[in-house]
Image (cartoon, rainbow, N blue to C red; front, side, top):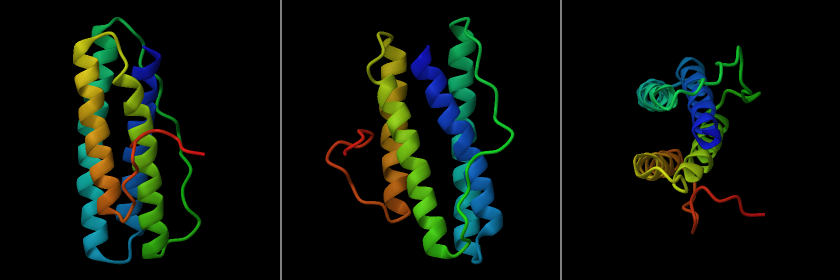
Length: 134
């Protein structure tokens, strides 16, 4: 349940982030891409919320605000989006270790999607996406 809650928190933050990117972007392509990804994250958010409810859990509340970048230029927004996707990937990774097969499959799919989106924003492919390397 904690992995589900963490994944849902990451998706809540991603929706907020991409709606910000869509509004702050100075070019139409980046703005449209932000809106499209906000929609993708809304789908994942709904799926995770339902998974918590199906397991008789209580979904974590949506925060009133989430951290945003101070800059609004293209490179700053791209880096911000990569960070958002890395956070989602890390959260999804924990679902891949769940006892529940459906949650493992969901986690793997969300991990793959976050990794691909991070690459679309200019991120680098890690050998082990979702793992924190320090």
